[in-house]
Image (cartoon, rainbow over all chains, first blue to last red; front, side, top):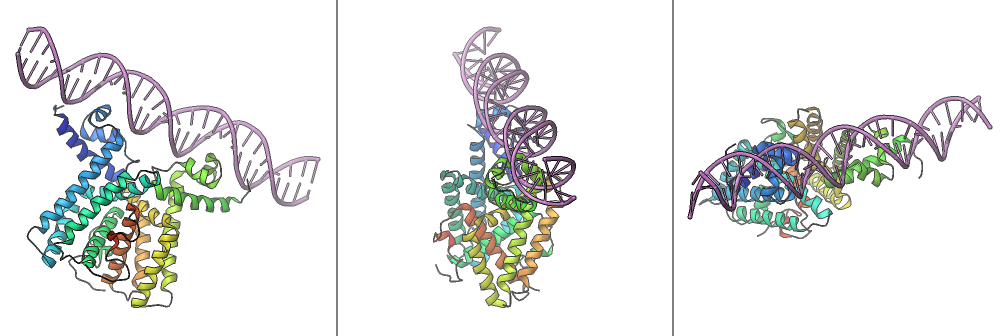
Amino acid sequence: MARMSAEERRESVIQAATTEFARGGYHGTSTEAIARRVGVSQPYLFRLFPGKKAIFLATAERCVEDTIRMFAEAAQGREGEEARHAMGAAYIEAISEQPERLMMQMQMYLAVAAAEAEGDHEFGEAVRAGWMRLWDTIHLPLGADAHDTTTFLAQGMLINCLVAMGFPAGHRAWAGLGPSESSD
Amino acid sequence: MARMSAEERRESVIQAATTEFARGGYHGTSTEAIARRVGVSQPYLFRLFPGKKAIFLATAERCVEDTIRMFAEAAQGREGEEARHAMGAAYIEAISEQPERLMMQMQMYLAVAAAEAEGDHEFGEAVRAGWMRLWDTIHLPLGADAHDTTTFLAQGMLINCLVAMGFPAGHRAWAGLGPSESSD
DNA sequence: ATGGTTAGTGATTGAGCACTAACTTCAGTG
DNA sequence: CACTGAAGTTAGTGCTCAATCACTAACCAT
């Protein structure tokens, strides 16, 4: 019931939409579900944003932004193995604190494929640009080695998938990931 | 117009559904789109399958099955680095030949999260079991080293994401992946 | 031919959805 | 205190979609 400025409302819509889109993807999420989570009537969303697509877009952008900032902050003043460790820890923390952001990323990647198939290349361009910014953000602290950067990102993507699939912590599917201990 | 046995039709529905679900995910794909691709009326799908969900399930199962068989065949009679190379090559080939299967996998992973959120753990169990079968399938040929297995899978997941995002071959986003050459 | 089974369609329905239009409530200001 | 503009709602529209029903067309025994 608390009245808010439009800007503040838009912000809380993005938060709510992250959770909802993370679960159901673009098509599996109704604007009504988002509105309910915000605590506002559904039609009001269309005063804050021009349409559902715009909400998804804003949410996706925010998600990339946050992830990049997270890595940048974790790597702050660190290099090489130390940076890798700090960024890895930050990622693990982010997963347990707000897995939505991570799931939203996956939804975003798949949404690109759908958009491209329908002739919309703009969204894809934006996401790819975001990915490359992420790439560069971790590339330098990791010592500017393409192989190391790729390995780090690959582990991240695997973690995303394992989380999506709902493997509980400690399951043997997680073997070989942890703090670089490896064993049979 | 060619009449087919119900079993043959079910098969072609699975093929068509793989393509459609890969693009749009569960919610972004209409049964009409699948029917159109099969070349059959939309209501008839509901004679072949009890519902949309059943079509998705059958498609997902087939997808996992095919992937596992692909790796098993590629690794046939090989071990260690040789097996890794053969399986990697098979994966690359599968991507260029039928990227739908790979995208369908991603859609599947995300569908698990949605299903679990709605209290359906059955689907998740099935997908996780499929993943572990895949895990074991590549684990042995790779020398039964958990770290190597995980690294292999991680690269696969990264490839999936890059394909989904639509990075063209040769883009620097692919750096550090190729045939294990690494450079700055 | 005929009686029965299996493949397949057209018409329809009811629910859910994105989005619009018109109205209401309230905080701040002259 | 009246006025205004921004925050927010209620009611409604047109569309899409999964699923059902009643029906037709082709195949296969005897």
